[in-house]
Image (cartoon, rainbow, N blue to C red; front, side):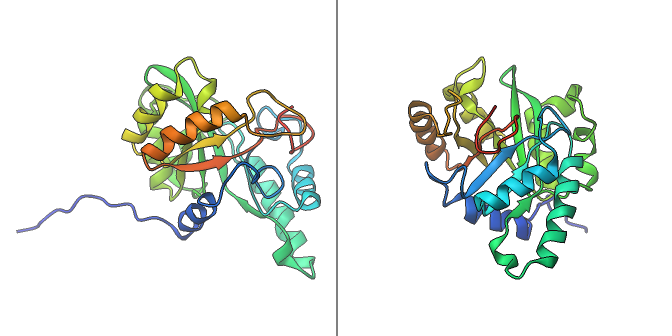
Amino acid sequence: MIIQTPLVVSESIATVRLRKIFATVDAVSCPHRLNFHLHTVHSDGKMQPIDLIQQAIVLGVCHLAITDHHAVSGYFIAREYLDQVISQSHDPHALPTLWSGIEINASLNFTEVHILGYGFDPDHEAMQPYLQSKTTAGLDYQAISVIKSLHVAGGLAVLAHPARYRRSPEDLIPTAAALGIDGVETYYGYDNSDPWKPSPRQTEEIRHIADSYGLMHTCGTDSHGFKISRRL
């Protein structure tokens, strides 16, 4: 008799490291130490991937992710450049760590939301529907499918800017948690201030909800312009 056991997706070394990093996130982590929400010309941003990495080095950023919409081509260019810089550096430990990242459109509670993915294998077949530079459809468009695909590819799934949608964080975060999401983008600048800082009211509300469901907290500027230290 053959006993079939359920499929268990064990966490990768990358996601274990990321969980430890996200456990340290607070209101002053971004943008000078951490920045896990950045866009390049490979989706709807204005910055070249190499320029983005150069800015991160100057700012002294420790960990970052390029989260282009439905694309990882900018990540690969940035990673190749950063690898070259590290190989030529006398102090490679002072340079940033670049994590794989992506931002995916999905349906959650009949509302379109964005799900951020981190630490996944961009070459994994589970990610292929989401690397076509366009929003998916059908089952692939459902939040549960996005979350599962990121997990199968060895990554983490995070609900981006929970207070920017048609439905409230109180509606969206519990549903996302029930589907297995790992965290929320708690620290986000909804008013696009300069210098960048997380919006206090939304941060307090979202952190409280996320904590009640045991979710991680992340932060990022959601940069679309020529400076990684602000959104536009």
